[in-house]
Amino acid sequence: MNSQRLILVTGASGYVGGRLVRDLVEDKCAVRVLVRDAQKVKDQPWAKDVEIVEGNANNLADLSRALRGVHTTFYLLHSINAGKNFDEVENAMAKNFALAAEAESVSQIVYLGGIANDKNRSQHLASRMNTGAQLASGKVPVLELRAGIIIGSGSASFEMLRHLTHRLPIMTTPKWVSNLTQPISIRDALYYLRTCAVLPTPVSKICDIGGKEVLSYADMMQKFAKLSGLRKRWIIQVPVLTPKLSSLWIGFVTPVPTSLARPLVESLISEVVADQKKSIDSIIAPPPEGFIDVEGAITLALSKIADHDVITRWSDAAYPTAPWQKAQSDPEWAGEMVLRDRREQVTDASAPALWQAIESIGGDNGWYGADFLWYMRGLLDRLVGGVGLRRGRRDDLSLRIGDSLDFWRVEELERGVRLKLYAEMILPGKAWLEFSIREENGQRIVRQEASFSPRGLGGQLYWYAVLPFHIFVFPTMMRNLIRKANRTDYANS
Image (cartoon, rainbow, N blue to C red; front, side):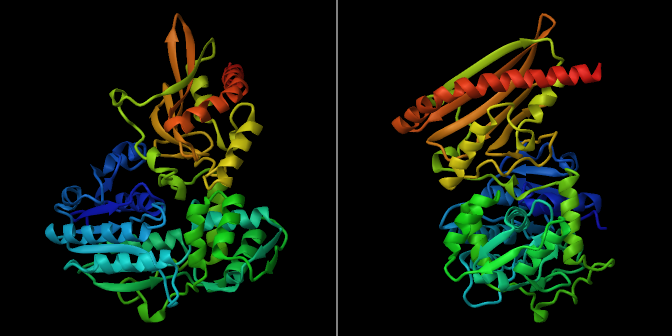
């Protein structure tokens, strides 16, 4: 493939973007990525092979820096987690991007949107369409690829349907489960995107991309059950389940929080079938090896999950729990109150074994004791609209900066030395959990620190209300963490 063109990928820390960057690097393309936080992608396997520009997509100066000298740019940004007015945020962001791309003489914009055939579109699908229109409002040609559900390990829609199927042998569902959809595998979606990077001439067109099968959502859930070795699901349609009620239930049963589930559910109300009049075949031929069918795509995704080989996940994008929690790294001199629970313990366990225990915390591995209390805290978080514990981990053994870890996110990671997690649960303030290891007199000292920056009196009252639980949770965590490290050393001796 052509390595002379400079390709910009926005949304590189997201589900599709992270995989696209990997593929473009494999194709020997010259790649630049625009990210808000360069630290978040530094552990990606492709990080050393791309140019990383740190900036905000809402800032014209940052966009100009990122787009300078670029031939083709992929627009993979969305603000579905930005609150009720996410469509206004997306509209303004796309307009700024079109202006900056035109000013920097970009040759081609490629945008991944959503198929929307019905007139009564959800806010989410309408915003996807408006984003495409704003990008095309400038003079730079825009190739807009519209897709329905993308089947792949880590996709939000995939995880939502998978968990509903696995956890509910009998489901009462809204009537939209009979609606038709034309899903596409992540492999096939990436095939189209990576081919867009080497189009011989710029293209300005809207094209639908879909897989080889059209089926109902109910049929897709039955395929999930069959391929997972589960019995056929009983699906009972009821007319009273509104999108709001459905999203509350999905937020409770699946890892997808209610705030993200609702726009996704509203989108499911529309039939999502590719329009043959908007075929991409005249621009890009179908995949040479053929499309993966739905069962093949589900099987591949489930195998990736089983093998802990999930490269990116929907939860890689930060989850905004509350406005005051978005600025995570206020400087010490800013004067904010920080309340701490700090514990240290000296141990003979080796540093590698201690780090292995620290890095494998959470998810299916648990939190080293008092797991019931962690479960109850996660349940409480989900009941008030938070992410809860069900996001789990991308990988059972290793972490990267930016990874989601139950209701935490990896904020800082110095492998073998220090791990700092930032809380994305609903809280009246900002919270962190940090582990570190240091050597002293031939022994290791493990430090475990929970810190909390309260928001007003309510935040301070919250800290002191949960303080008694710390007596059970944190000493047990420290003790069992070291115990696990000692067992690892014994097994390796």
